[in-house]
Length: 592
Image (cartoon, rainbow, N blue to C red; front, side, top):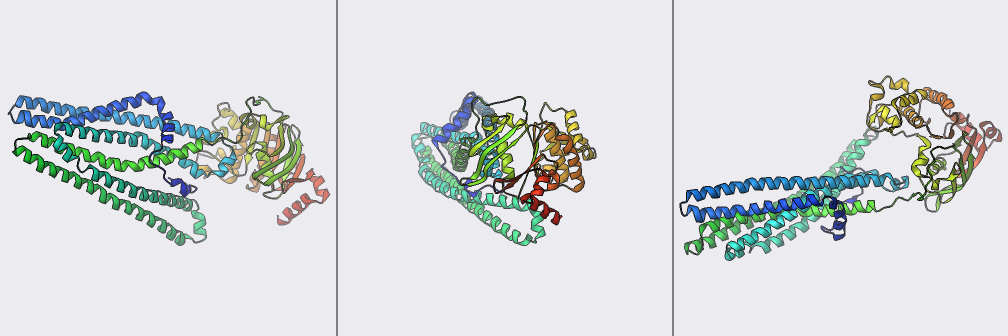
């Protein structure tokens, strides 16, 4: 399935064969070279036994039936049965081996993609929608699996079969062999025309299918909004339009299939008729044995099936080449935030923070932070307030090194965050966001995130300290209760309490609360406020909040306006100044 963010140009198909991409793919196949070699040997054996069948029929007719030799006929019959059984076994071994290689290569590529995505910074995910990345890891890798386990294998098998049949027919009788192969140029031309038309229709159907999936995903996700504003009929008509065009594209593809594949059957029937006509005349003249004609008819019937298959496999090659190009483009995009070779990994942190003339831009030439400078001593609590979009969350992002600053420095315990190992830096920082993300799994696993060093007892203690156990105990299985998709059965306040427990279970030196109480009810906010006064002891804290009532206990408040620190001081000091903070306070309480 395609997510709503998959761009239509993602579905544009490339060449059916690209040497550069194939060589890159071979680097993932190389570890399984022995299995590939075995698969090829199984394929050769299977093809040989397939070619042997018609020849055995020819021998049975001309040598034993004509001579009324039942003993010889029994031997040929047993040989034919043995060839059929052997063909089945070799085909099974070949299919199993190629599928095994395909699945292992697909596993390795997905692991490489996921591991690569883990090291990208948030700016990368700002540029690349989730739907597109999902398509890379799931759909595009699956296309490569089809190429490895079906496309390449079928292409080699079909090519080997056609070549083997052509050689066998020419060896049996070169005159009939040339006659049987006389329609191959016609078939080649028809296959080329079909392939070109099929490429266009396949490309169009893929493009429309991406739009159909994306529109469906978007409407189901936003069904409440659709119904609230009475847009059901309008959206139905739009979906109908996309769905109709998708149907018409598929019907066009069906039209070409309905022409090409019967044409292959007609060519096969015409070839058999020519063989009967020419071969029958030669038999009557005593120039040919009847078994040869029977063998030729069987060879012809076996030759046209691979021709059909080769035409069908073209789309697999084409889609796989496009997918591999997108996959390798993603793998080749390096992370923008890198650490020096001798990155700092302190085991402990005091929690001292200092911003020195920090500038940050998400878009070049449009800074969101402009010369931010302040210091937070170990154990100190500061609050960041100000209008939405003026840089409060950007200060947090820069501290966690989610984005690289353009100018200035950010020091944690006197060390530039660019010199820290990113994992070590973030291990000392606990982050609680307004939009809490819960993963599939149990309540306890969502608190510990599966970290082995956090025991179940520590999970319970963290939940107890933020008053989360009050609602966890009401769940059917307590901490072992399964969390539904993104915590759908939990309230916003309950999800935020779990986020508090998660941060505390990791016991960070620095605690960051980014609008952590902005969407909770009054009772839950009081619980959190009560927990904060205890939990923030001996811990450096930065609190981002719109509700000024939640940060009055802070040691200092920084007022952020248009990317700069406009005012700084305690709650009482800032109110006494009658400045920007005082106006925010007055406006908020008037609205309240």
